[in-house]
Image 1 (cartoon, helix red, strand yellow):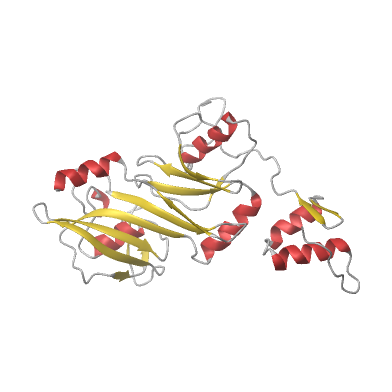
Image 2: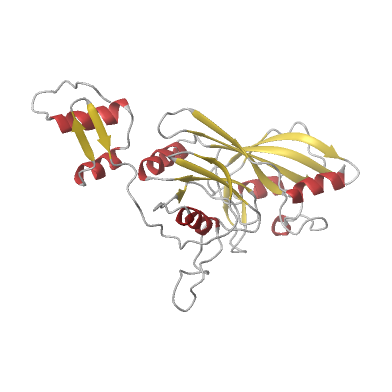
Length: 294
């Protein structure tokens, strides 16, 4: 409810409303242009109605499968991504067709299936990604307003992510920050490497526990940047490859994939700006690993 708005010379009421939304609520200009063009802004007296929840068709074919919700409101959805599940389909999986009517099993398809099962025409969009074999929370925007605001927060590095990992060797307490650029490895299509010509990458490291009998350490990691395989590359370059991460020199004695889990996700709420923190409990595989080392 903007109340009575003062009109500047040559300004109509709709112009005044758009200015109030942009300046007072920091509504994304791109969204306001869409709403104005589509008649999605209605003003009656001092009351304002915005069409910010229009029905949308998801680009991902709905798949009915297990989905663990960690947080949900009218704007945001946070779900747990298990290890071994991709966030979204890639080129190799292709799209649903008559020849292959079964949707690919990805987190995005499961989310589409979740909303379809509730009868909600929702095209939720993931804001960030995790490696296929990294577990943890993934943030989805439920409407265009949230999508644009969360994308802005992501570009300003306001979305925080904390991870835990089991790594090889005894990590020194002095290892606090790894600040090394990361680029592609021209000798291996899937690998990344520390490279002077790469993109800036910063990882903060906290040693949590050491298991000297197995020469293993548990570390907590916070990212300033989100480069592909950043944690895996940085820890390997520091001489502490992740347990199970064969691609970067880790042993697969105890696990067949990297022992890496997103423990916490923090973000400013797209409407209120209030800080939201979502914890994701350790998956059983990592709990068993810690029990084995202890």
